[in-house]
Length: 435
Image 1 (cartoon, rainbow, N blue to C red):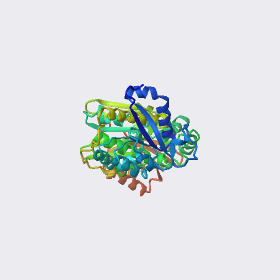
Image 2 (image 1 turned 120 degrees about the vertical axis):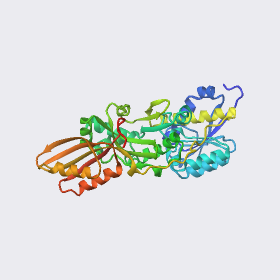
Image 3 (image 1 turned 180 degrees about the vertical axis):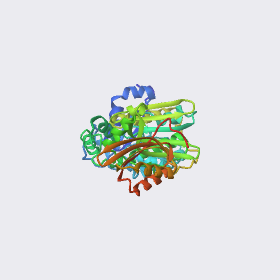
Image 4 (image 1 turned 90 degrees about the vertical axis):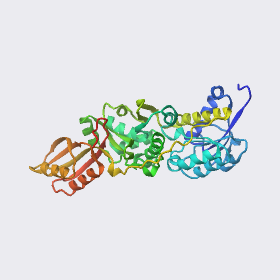
């Protein structure tokens, strides 16, 4: 029991999967939360789209409304929790809440990756707190560590598996030999994938999360449109099998690097060494690998989605703000005090895994090698598999600029000695040499 009887009242916008989890945690753990914060946290009202929709948690009818603005304008409400998703009307509602002096907690990756700078400025001008830990990594604490625990470091690299749907799909393809379509169907049956999984499998979800991570890590604003995104729909069992033979595992990897000539931010299928910590991250789990100059290498691992994991992060933010309300403190605001350039994808340097089919006859390899040489691309290793009248070439290049690799692919496509290019997949290797 809090001796002074202080109550912090919350208004929530949205009561779907994550919102229901927030209500459940605040209700089930009310006593412990009260002791940890020094006050009671009470959800006063919840704005929903349709009062008739089924709920994942039991709430009284008196708490529900379809008028989100009435929740924001309620003078008794101290803190707004936004778990509705989407850029609008979430952006407008949050800006109105901040202008009214209310603190805000959001789980909205789309909003923060596109309008994060505007939202953070509005919070600063209003003297209010905005927290959004659940926008990246679900229940994994990562944003607060980047802003506070690791603030003394120069972070130079983030590698992340930040989308549970694609990681589950690739795990099933790798371990069970399922095709992409079979693995997606299984993910949908288990509730790991939406009926329309395009945002996940095309890399947009991971790109939004990476924009937020990179902004935090490198102290320079990165938005969703800055992130190169490529999905996993073209990954085949052959890619997985040949990668395994060469000692690699395929993951949809979010890669952010702070380099001398700018920030590189990209999401794409990636070959990573089988002994890398991220290679062992299975099924719907997420993991974020961080490299700092003082701390070295860290990995944050756990459930990246789901009602209670994401809600755990939301409630953690609520508790942080509640403590500040009692003490008069503030959360760390915007830390994007640099304006670093974003590197064009054509200038990114990495290794590449390639598969292409050629006629099995003398002189073919020499002509292919000539195309690589003309574009300054050096081959690290190559394997040839006979297939009757054809041969399948599997190779990995040395480090090369993306622009040079693209020119090589174009040259191979125009070469009569190449029947088809089957796969081109980037390789993220800690031992990769720099140009």
